[in-house]
Image 1 (cartoon, rainbow, N blue to C red):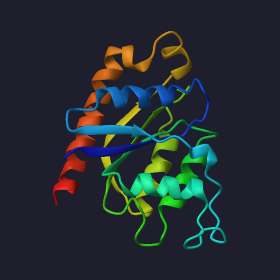
Image 2 (tube, rainbow, N blue to C red; image 1 turned 120 degrees about the vertical axis):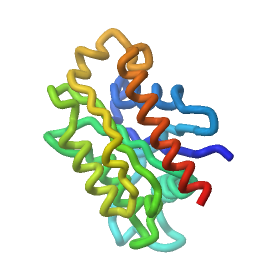
Image 3 (cartoon, rainbow, N blue to C red; image 1 turned 135 degrees about the vertical axis):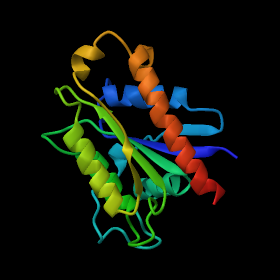
Image 4 (cartoon, helix red, strand yellow; image 1 turned 180 degrees about the vertical axis):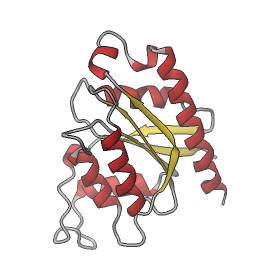
Length: 187
C-alpha cells in the first residue's frame, strides 16, 4: 500500500522557490510513498461559512477537501509574507479544518518546511503554519523542520533538486513524514 502525502505550496508565483522545493520532494519520495503537489489553491474562494453548505460547497473547495481526505499526511511549503503565513495556505487550512472536529487534518501527520529571501528562511511563517494546522487537528511533527534562507540568491541559478545539501535535508524530511504517515495508514 502506498502512502499518499499531499503537498500544499504557499506561493502561487510561477518561479516560486517553494514550488521548486515541493518538486524536489516529489522526486525524493521513498518507495511506497507518493508526494502529490496540489494544483488549484488559487481557485479556492476565501473561507466563508455562508458558502460552506452541505451539498453546495464551491467546486474548488470540494476538490481540495477530496484530495486532502484521500491523503495520509501533509507537507506544507511556506514562504514568508510580511512576517507570517501566506493567505493561500491559511485559506486552505481554514477549508480543511471543517467540518469542525472532523476536518481532513484530524490525526494525520503534518510537516512544514520552506524557503524565503530573508536570513531565517521564513521561520515565522512556518511556525504560524504549524500553529494553525495543529489547531485544525493535524499531528504536527514539531521536530521535523527545514528553513532555507536566502532563496533568491541560493536558487538563482540552481534548482533545489540540484543542491546536494538541500537534497539530503529534504530527503530526511520526506522519509520521516513517510514513516509517520505509514504508521497512521497501518493503524
